[in-house]
Length: 143
Ligand code: HEC
Image (tube, helix red, strand yellow):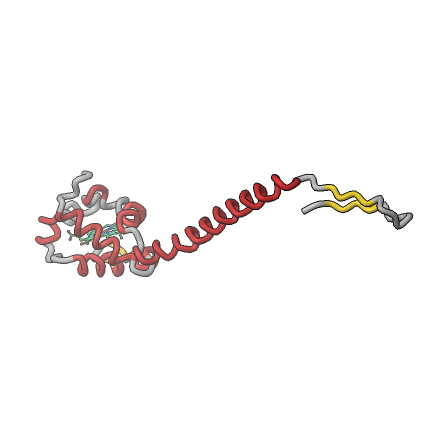
C-alpha cells in the first residue's frame, strides 16, 4: 500500500514514498475489507440455501388453495353446489375419507368441477389436499 513517486530524471536520491494510508490505515482497511467479505459470503450462503429449503418443504397448500380453489370453495364451502362443500360432514357423506382422494379430485376434477393438475404443478394436488383435509378436521377455523 503506497504510492511511489520517482522524479528519476537525474537518477539521484530525490525519491519520495507517499503512504496516504500510513501504518495505521492499512490494518483498518484490511479489517473493513474482511468484514465486507464475510457479509458477502454469508449472504451468498444464505441465498444458496433458501431455494433448497423451499424445495424440501414443497408447495404451500394454503397458498395453492387461495389461488386455485377458494374462488368456488371460499372458507371450505361450495358456491356452485351447496351440498358438495369441503367440510368434513359433506366430504364423508360424499365418500371422501382421506387426503389422497381430495388430491385426485384436485388434479382430475369431479362432475361439474374441472381438474387443476396442470396449474397446481408438481406435488401441488397433494399439498392442497393435505391443507383441505387438515382444515376439514379443524372445521375450517378461519371461516
Ligand atoms: C370453478 C369452481 C371450482 C373450483 C375453482 C374448484 N372447485 Fe372443487 N368443486 C366444485 C364443484 C362444482 C364441485 C362439485 C362437483 C360435482 O360433484 O359435480 C366441487 C367439488 C369438490 C370436492 C368434493 C366435495 C364434496 O363434498 O363432495 C373437492 C374435494 C373439491 N372440489 C376440491 C377442490 C380443490 C382442492 C380445488 C382447488 C384445486 C377446487 N376444488 C377448485 C367447483 C370448484
